[in-house]
Image (cartoon, rainbow, N blue to C red; front, side, top):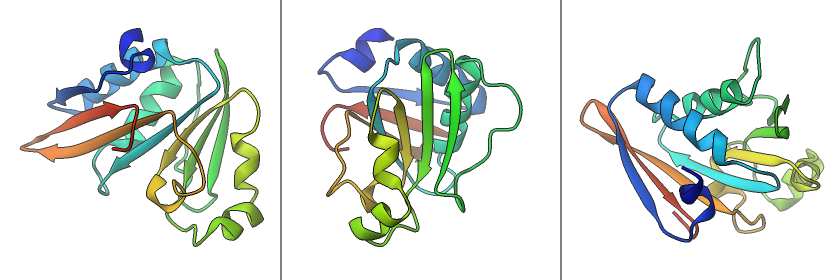
Amino acid sequence: MASIVESDRDFELFLPDETATLEFATDFARALSPPCAIALHGELGAGKTTFVRGILRALGVDGVIKSPTYALVESYDTDIGGIHHLDAYRIESEDDFEARGGHEYFDGASVQLVEWPERIESFMPFDLHVRFVFEGDGRRVFVARKGA
């Protein structure tokens, strides 16, 4: 798995169910090291939040893992340091992002996992793009260094 996060090669995998998504997230988490900004692409219900939950569990987070839909961000202390789970769906502009303190989460040695990154990617750089696409009863996940 380290090669997926550290490599310049694109990667894809079929995830037949939630269990497979959580297993992929666990493997992905083992290869993470801050700082790293990850764009999570996909339609509503495609598996982005499940993927984040799997990463956080694999990195030692216990208790409730909330969706950042209304709060913009939920932050967690993990075995590798701080992880910020952001939902950019309601961001209207870079000024809006700044007014909500969004840039602060990209400072320092942390990992940012951003849902709806298309709302901020014109002014925020990402190291990886992870795209979840519905395929039959499962999902296909694509991991890329460049835009998804």
